[in-house]
Image (cartoon, rainbow, N blue to C red; front, side):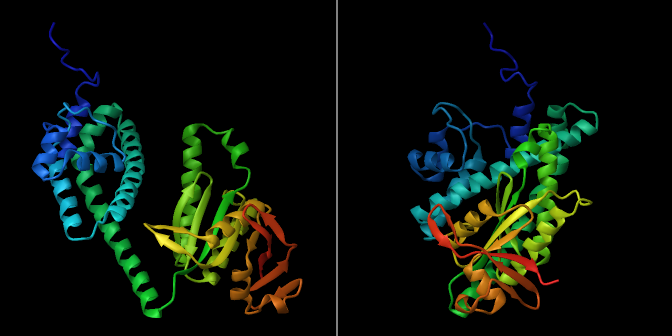
Length: 338
């Protein structure tokens, strides 16, 4: 019996996309790729899995010369001492997660565009791949280089000052997300969340902040100055409290102090405290920790009153709270001075 002409059952679209995106039809096995790259097949397989790609049977010809070149470049970086085993694992995993999510979004976007043009999504992806993908690739490279420049400037500023990484950290959480999400279709929910993230991004970037990541209905934001973070958090909660604004109601927790930065993420007690404050904040309120209070008010807690007013902010001291990992946290509710 002859094998089917279209074993994938997709009209040959995936095969055509492979050739378009990878530059050629896959023709190499794992062993052949590893041999040509000068690496052991075990190392090649570890890198493949760390990038988030599925297991490929040893006998399958699933790779191209682009995979060989990628392994050679990786081997070069290892030989130059850039990628130690620890750095290699962390960096490759981060690449895999980031690009997997980006690719999912881009494919969904292109399929929507193809549908709007009246084409079948599968055929539409193939039809516009040559026209769109090179431009997307160039734009991604530009955005990456711009962010690389910004990250380098921040690192140099920190090393020049001789101080650790001191940041204001804020979690912003949508109030009533679960109940709202039940009333929306999947498409409506995605559109709603993207609109929310877009609005937060604009407010954050305008004040020199950065969105580190989103965790479901929650965003993690950092800024270099506590004043910038206070302004971001207050604007977001004010927008959410405005019945005329489509922006959802949110609550926020802000902490300020030294954090550990690694591969674009932030860690440490300051991050944990910001998360805990957000979990106990009431809708449309901003809670801040001791570090944020003292930085914004210019006062120490020993000289604190139940209510403190400054030129830009007003603070109302709350009863100490106990949350997971932290007992009797000192907390203030932050409001604009006027």
